Length: 164
Image (tube, rainbow, N blue to C red; front, side):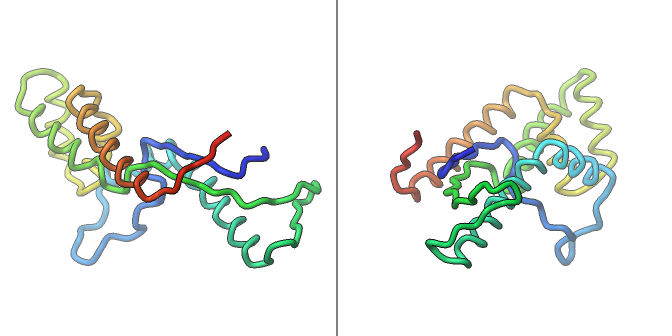
């Protein structure tokens, strides 16, 4: 589309989580798989787009300046400067777990559902699943505060951007 700079803002992690459990961690449970499935639906398209841009940028860097590279339809490839604001993998799950733990102690159908999820087990995926399913104002407040903190740290690293 002719862009040379892109600012990508995502509420989901913009990279894939580790593909295998770390040494000493249990194998994924059903809730871990469910969380990864939701992440696949919501974030994989964006992750693949970012990876595609990175591949194209590496290819153009490898062929050097002044060499035109075109796709099969004759369109010239150009490097794109991507700036990304997104939570890192696992950033939201502790926040969701904290809010869910408080909510489980309260009466009501939502608390019962949270107690059932806790009984089903899982590791980080359980909390990741909660971060997708938990529509609690306290969780949103914590999520927004974490996003603001992460964005401030990340944006401090950037030179001035010239978006048109």
